[in-house]
Length: 287
Image (cartoon, rainbow, N blue to C red; front, side):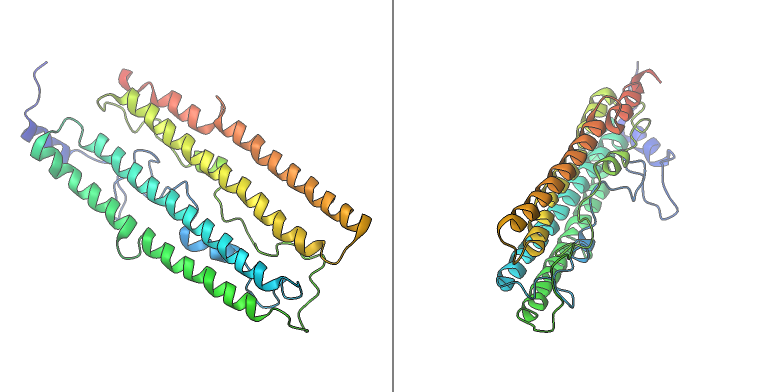
């Protein structure tokens, strides 16, 4: 078969209809949605932690300053985790856009085609309002909560902490594994692309990695959440009461971890979203 001249191919690609929205954004071949993202929002992490809010549950703890500082470090860890996930996905999104929309091009034509997607990636990561900027702002918010939390330590008017739940968290600063996997929709976006079956496998790996990262984040959260709450809930207890309190929290931890592990297994199994989408994608060369 005679190859289409590169300049003509470039012109055809420029004129060919692309999946796009009213704002002109090209759909991501991985998600088929320019707004699709399997990662937790960087600028929403600190809001999921309320340890520095008025009436801090740490205020009456003898090690209150230490707990505030530790909670701040945990807050920053989840901010960095969300930023890392978003950065990796921005790079993956650009890579797949280039592989799909610049397919068949070489040399100067390829570089010209790649440029806007590389710029889009770099802007998303380090541009104004990008991931790096959001990360910096959110890390500062974690620090502000440490200051607010510490200022309340030893307050005689602070509420009794016994029985408080969610001492450091008001929500989950992690994506859900199933939601992360279902963000991906590459079942028909790679049809006709050179080496499309290989790209389907690569897309499956990105989907799987995203689901694994979400599950790993949640498993880490179990340890942090239970660690803070158990210290507050069991504070001041002794003997059998302390033992019962700790055992109760240990059982909660085991149950919560097992639920996440079970969800992860289902998501990553043959019937999970990543595998199902990949199986449909692998038909790309025959359509």
